[in-house]
Image (cartoon, rainbow, N blue to C red):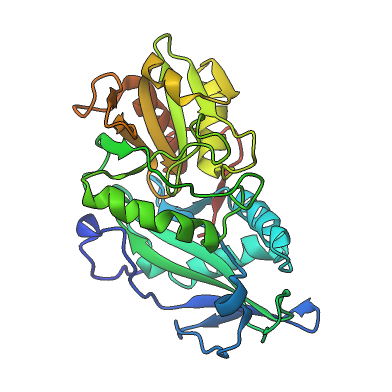
Length: 346
């Protein structure tokens, strides 16, 4: 039976929250996760002493549901999100949500909101945001004993308003994470660290920041919400790595590396990248679930010097364009999924 879609101008959607029909909820109490709940209530009622408010025990994920060329509703690598969220939870002393239940919960909440999944070719997707917070009362500095795992879904358009067009970045004076801290997990506290420098960057006309390593401010790390990819003149893909465990292990980045090596026959280097070698690269991009790949035209360093990549702000470079086209083609069912990444929901 065909699902009647919501009456929405899908092509005009921005990357913003729209309440849908149902959210998924599961509570942790007395050492165990409870039953699955699908609820139309998108609000939370918490004690003023809940651990989330005082010691910031919160982790989250981000993935999408798509309509493929053949009309199927699918998700991309939800098992990888489940694994990363479990790692994030363990790092800040939260009980990991079972990985198999995570994948099933994603399927449940997408099925409950099929009318909100944008049609193929609209440029929009259903964004899926699993998150977990400490709900139990905590006044002393220690982990809570009660938690809530939720998944909200919302239809979204492109992360950047201009679509796939080069953006300008700056190198900020601030760090987004501490050396050997929590920069390699997806926790809200890391994003809070990046908000102030992001506001400054936006006020100065930049799309985002290029954060350098927090220990020496020598190496390229990541932006406020995405990993970096760089391309040499000979077409080699270079993926910045961290010596201080302060880069988030992006699922999109890991997928693009496999696409580059195993489908496109590209040479890939995964290593630390000094900022002083940035001018050797002809392409630069930010990669993540929201934007897939957002090309970077130039970076302005702390001295005000512009470092321009290839065609700069004019157009996307050919290597990153091909990578993006291939990965989105797999997600949309236009290119064969040789990796088993695409999971059918309906």
